Length: 247
Length: 119
Length: 225
Image (cartoon, each protein chain N blue to C red):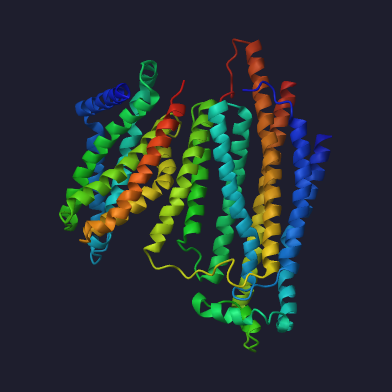
């Protein structure tokens, strides 16, 4: 464990720079989504939901990858910074998974005629959301902060091992059943403009994710600083109980 | 000094949120524009007719237009599609901005704690 | 290696001996499972043929009953801090995990020995078609269930939410096991040949191996201190 988070200023500067880049990317993506990309021929206007749905899904799964890698690193090195990145990525992953789960049915209602279909990718995203929820419940309910970090890291790793298995088995399950009518998002007539717009949206969301990750990471580090100061204050007055030090 | 920056920050956030939410509102006007010129996508017409039987779900007005057929699209369904696009984008941006605001609040709380401790 | 297995067996024997004395877990799980079957038989519309959905019903029952019992498997250690004693003894953490897992496995397999006949009795099912294949499917699925279950029970025992948290953590991760177990059980139930479930058996065995490695490793990080 490091003693004092000194690099908060650097983190903030990096977050601000990334935020500016992300804002530019998001503006460019929004312009392309509504003024550049043509209306897709077979799905119509709802296809434009994909420009927010697909990048969110990409970011949500990438976030879980980051959670798993940082958790592994945390269990190995016990560096508080790795845990701070993991918890920040998990929170953002929850936000983006929620976006995926909200925008998906809005598209499906028009394209499939149903709000919810047990389609493999949709099912996987729903389970990812539940794993994220479990991550925060486990972390928050642990008896001590250190235990919470360790348990959450274990869940992050086991979850990352299990997600491919869930994907595999859900796909196997669907192949045993009549398939829903699926309009492939990147269907046969993917115009170059559509692909370009999707790529710009992916880039914009990735930038946005990393900007928010740094922002949230700064908060976690500041909290660590407060905790350290509180522990020092408790050391100075040995008789006083450490109130709220273990959250 | 702190409250000044956070107020400016909040104003900026509100402006960005308004911009992001209002952008999808441009879509209906835009689509009418493209609907008045249906010859814009003649090359995709053949592929879309191929795709048509396999999809089997009633889709929105676009394929009929690209086929060059003068069929009138069902207005409520199309309108609803616009609503869905608008809701999807609005929800996404609201969630993200809500998250930023929530982290900002937590920042404020921790900073006040730090100041109270004199650290 | 022999030492490792001997330690694991010792831990399992300790847990099973405790269970033999009190019988509290197996009795509560068994009674709960039978009650679920009773509830199912009244909750289902009488015109529905139970044979078509029995695979799902049985696995839902086993999952809920198993989760109920798993919650208690570390409760004793957590309550009286007996885990400290176990950790101070020269037993490898992996062996400790395997011992705990083996004890849980035996207990849940015992409950399944009650569940299957009870369902056969209540819903007129016939499991005698291919007993070896059924035993393989049930055994492998239960091994996977207990590997993940023992790991997460160790964690949830040290939280304020305790047993409430366990199903929330466990059920999403158990989906792969449930999918293959329920569909294979259902196929055997309607009299399909055992060769049809061979792929499910192989996949379940592969999942078990992966869970065994990951959970045994992860357990070391759960119980350290």
